[in-house]
Image (cartoon, rainbow, N blue to C red):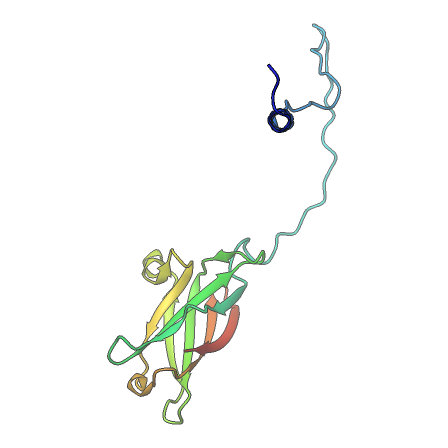
Length: 179
C-alpha cells in the first residue's frame, strides 16, 4: 500500500518529532565508585581551620525598602471618604516581605485647609500583623480618615509620606500621591 506524498511526509515528520521529544536518561558523569576492600583502615584528617565569618547586621529577608502601592486610593464610597494606603515592603533581593515595627504615615491634602495629619500603625505583634496584612496583594493596608477627609474631591490627590521604624530603631521612608 502506497501513501500519498503529503501523508508520508506528515507521518515521517511526526515520527522524527516524537523521537526528538522522547525523554532521555540522565547521563552520570564522573568515575565509578567502587566499594572499599574489607579490613581497610581509613584515616580522616581533621578539617582545616576556617576564618570566622561576620554575620550581616540585618536579618535576612527583612524589609529594606517601602513603596506606596499603585493600588492605594481615595475611597469615596465611604462617608466621609477614606484614604486607603497600601504599603509594599521589599527585602534585599527585591521580593515582597513583611515588616516588624511601627508604620508612621503623614497625609497632606492638595488644599490649604488640608494640613498634615499623622497616623501610627503598629506592626509588632501577630495580631497587628493579621489586622493590616492583605494576602492577595502582599501589602499592608491602612484605611485612614484625616479630619479633613470630607473635603477631598473626587479626582483629588493626597500626599502620603510613610516611615517604617523597625524593631532595631532604624527607619525606611517613602512618599507618593494617592488619588
